[in-house]
Image 1: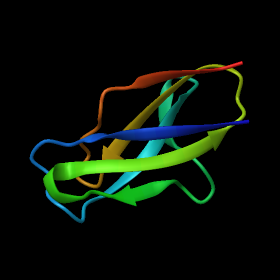
Image 2 (image 1 turned 135 degrees about the vertical axis):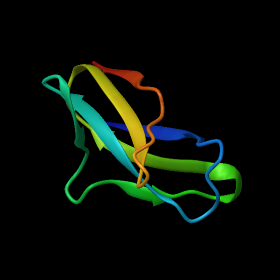
Image 3 (image 1 turned 180 degrees about the horizontal axis):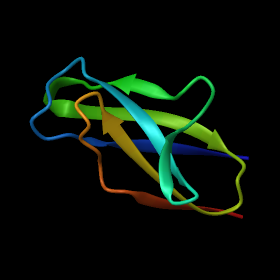
Image 4 (image 1 turned 120 degrees about the horizontal axis):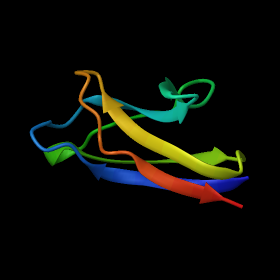
Length: 79
């Protein structure tokens, strides 16, 4: 397993918005983790969280706000 930090910014979102980590699984986006990994935006829509994953190979992650907006996907390779 590896720890991965996911951080970024949602332009236009203020502080206090809940965002959730998602992973692409079988062609669809699904909430990641049990319970789902979430965090709250800071001033300016910035966020930062971390996850543990042991799924080897290429993993696609994104972060989605309650409003339905999503970040671009990032690729994480686990060896």
